[in-house]
Image (cartoon, rainbow, N blue to C red; front, side, top):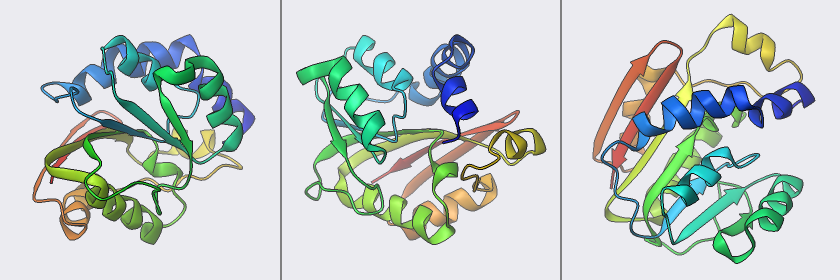
Length: 186
C-alpha cells in the first residue's frame, strides 16, 4: 500500500467506518467460535475487533512482512500471525471454520490471483464453514486514492460466480453504497 493508504487504514476515520459500521454488517450472524482465519489484516483494525469480539482461536495471514511483524509485536501469542500469500496458504485443508476477508481482495493484482485466493479459502475452510467479508466497489475516488498502489476491485456481479467456481456452494452478496459484503458457505 502507498503511504497515504497505510496512514488511512490505521486512522480513527477508517476504524469508525470499518469497525463501527462495515464489520458488524459483515459478521452479522457469523459463528466466530471455531478456528478463524483473517486474510490480509494490514494494520490490524479488524484483527483488534475480532479479539474484542472474543475470538479465541484467531490466525491472521499477512503478505507484507513488516505489517505481520507489527501484528506479532502487538498481539504476542493471542493471535497467530503468519506471513504468507493468500494465493498459496500455508495451512492444512479444512483447518478453519470461518474466514474473514475485509477490504483486501482489491489489493490482489489480477483476476487469476483473486480466484486463487478464493480457491485457497475454499481449500482451508471446513465443510459447513463460512467465508465472510467485504470489499470496495469500483469508483474514481478509490482509484485515485490507490495511486502507486494495487487497485483491482471485483465487480460485485462477478463475485458469486467466481466464488462458486472456487467451490463455494452457498454464496450471498449484498451492496450498500461503495461497499459490498459477501458470505460464501463451504
